Amino acid sequence: MVKTASAQTPYKRFAQNLKHALDHLRCTPAERALFREPKHIWKNTITIVRDNRTSANFPAFRVQYNDARGPYKGGIRFHPAADEDEVKALAALMAIKTAVVDIPFGGAKGGVQCDPKNLSKREVQLLSRAYVRAFATHIGPDIDVPAPDVNTNPDIMGWMRDEYEVLTKSFAPAVITGKPLSYGGSLGRDTATARGAFFILEELIERKALNPKDLRVVIQGFGNAGAAMAQFLHNAGCTIVAVSDSHGGIYYKEGLDPVRIQKYKSSTGSVTGEYCQGSVCDIKKMKMDNVQAVTNEELLELPCDILIPAALDNVITAKNAGKIQAHFILELANGPTTPEADSILTKRNIQVIPDVLSNAGGVTVSYFEWVQGRSGEQWTAERVDADLKRIMLAAFRAVRREAGREKLSYRGAAFVLGVKRMLETMRVRGWVK
Image (cartoon, rainbow, N blue to C red; front, side):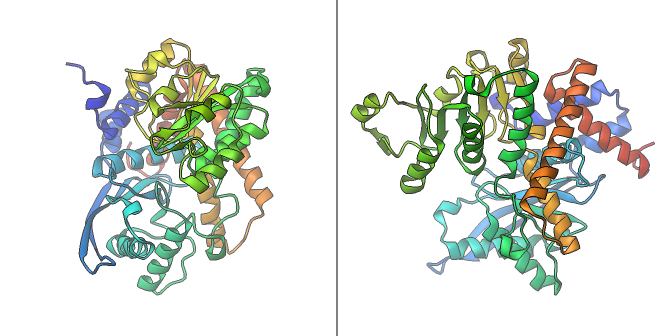
């Protein structure tokens, strides 16, 4: 019996893509064993005293998948769905991603099962510091370098760095990345994920001899990465026809203004805030502006040239892949497309730029921040941007060559390239003959 995408866990979806790469490279059983499971899965229960003086417990994880190419690297997310399997999958994807962009890191991920929206700022700080205490012996500038992820931010990274330094009685600006600029952060980190993806898309548009003014773009997810990407593409002349967040989305075929959308999201909490309060929308105003309210599911199937999933994983599945009308899909989210959907999209000649390539701008600038922390330098914004562009385009071109030479999809080529680079280092280190 073939399992449906919904029956698969995130790690099983990763393993399916990994297997294709291992099969393609004709890896030996000994080589395959190195990729089967993470090297370490650390678990703990974090306890904090809440503002109402009651105790609250939260499951917490740090998964270290592979460190063949350098210290483990990966974000920490605070989310109700951050269970062991999800964190495992994200750690594994990070190992492939750092190898694809050829930076000297391995792959890791962390998570705390909580809803930070239901916590006060003080409680979030307590949780952040408790996380570092729980896993302090497993992280460090040369061991494992955490970073922000879903629902975590520079303030949280600053608290975590401070807690680590208090515990270890050390000065450790390179222990964590994504910190505030005033506390060892890097210029360009806030928009790095979108900026890296934009460089790839810019190159793709040029190679396909497309005119940005003719391109219609749909973006699912208007958080940090999605909002920044909308602005970059708008500035380049593309037409943003639809955007969404967790509350729903809006569609206007003549083009939306990302600045205006961000303004209303900031004041109302939603991209639909100009027209809707909760589920109640001003239909008259929407008709006057020719704007339609759409669900996140409907948004994926809108007519467009470029579809950018920038929110959750597992949103493009076998169920909706046949209805997608985009010509290109650029993955800003981690794991938005299931393997079954990938097969359908490939048959339909819809080109997917996979997450392990397209959203690697964040970890690349995290690498820059780590280098700056170790050296005591402060890079200019121009240097960060130039080096990010160089690395992202080198990765894209390497994946493109691999895809053409081996007749693979871009995802298949990225996995093959990442695994190949990891194996090369493992052989040098004597992990495998």
